[in-house]
Image 1: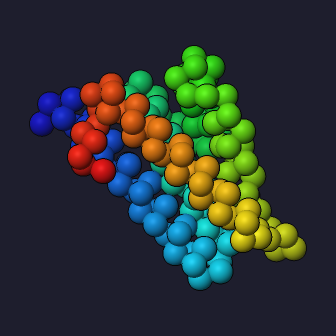
Image 2 (image 1 turned 180 degrees about the horizontal axis):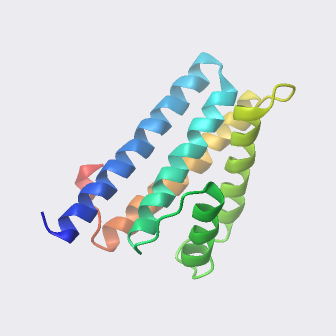
Image 3 (image 1 turned 180 degrees about the vertical axis):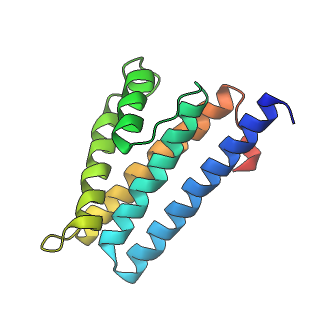
Length: 140
């Protein structure tokens, strides 16, 4: 398998994982488990950010590295709106609460906002990948 095919296959797997994470987030909302819904929404956006960074051959081992590189390569360059930086920061903060806090918890309306933020990020990343020839829109 050539490098381009390998990259496209890896991107497909990463986006599919993001989509599975979104589906899990939606299930958690329906079940009233808002902490985990927000966490899964964050991870859905995170996996899609990792995918788009891979198109530039950028791989990071820490969440902060992924977020910083996404901001540098895709938000500061105006590929995506500045609003995305705020959405990502919110998702990261909510994930921290959902995963690690015991005396704080995410409310239903917050979880639903997190899902909408993650959906927008994923949708726009998939659109970008398609425009750049990395993703077949019919594959999603």
